[in-house]
Image (cartoon, rainbow, N blue to C red; front, side, top):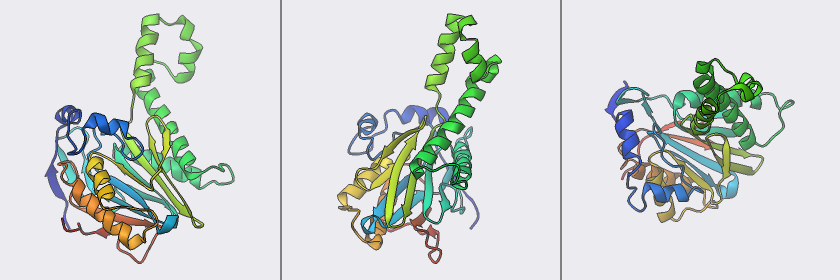
Length: 281
C-alpha cells in the first residue's frame, strides 16, 4: 500500500495545544500526576504506544500506530513499516517508542549492542534500556549545549572554576532542561517471567504496577479504555489483544494518532501477521 500523507499539527502550534489538551476524563496536568500508567505528552510524540501483560505474565501484547512525524514540517507520514515504533531486540524482548523517532532509533541500536554482549553487561533488560538512553542523551546534550561553546563535558568540568558565573548558570540551565523528547516502553517476557517499564528523559525508569503502560499523545484515551474494559494481566492473550485493539481505536480520537495499527507479541510469534487492521470502533 502506498504511503499516505496525513496533516498534523505544526511543531509550534502542537507544543501550545499539548499544554491544555483535554483527554476527556482528565487534563494534561492531571496526567502528569498519574505517572504509573501514562507518560506525559511531549512536543513531538504524535503517537500512541501500548504494552499489556497477558496469560499471568507469560505473554505481552504490544501495539502502536504507524504515524511518523517530520520534525520541522506540519505533515506526518503513515507508513506500512511495522518496525517504525516497535523494535524487537530478540525473540523475548522489545521496545515501544514514542516521540523523536530518530533519537529513539539511536537508543535502540545502543540497546542491541549492550544486549548482544551479555558477557560484558549482566543486568535486567530495563537497566540496559536505561543505560542506552542515558548514553545517547549524554552525547546529544553535549553536542547541543557544550560543543557550540567549544566545550566538552570533560573540559567543562576541568575549567569550571575559570568560567564566568553567568556562563556556568546558562550552561547548567541548558543541561538540566535538555530533553530528547523520547519515551520508551521496555518489555521483556522470558522463561515464564516478564518485566515492563517506562524509560524517559534523562533515563528515569518506572516499573509498571498494573501490567500495562501507555505512552504518546493518545495515551490518555488508551489508558481509560483499558481500565473501562476491566483489564487484568491474568487474562488470556486473546482477551488482552482485544482490549489493546479497542484502546488503540479509542486513542484515535486524538488527531495526532494514526489509523494504521502495528500489533506484536512477546514471546515473538512469527506465524502471526505483524501489521493488524484497525479494530471496529
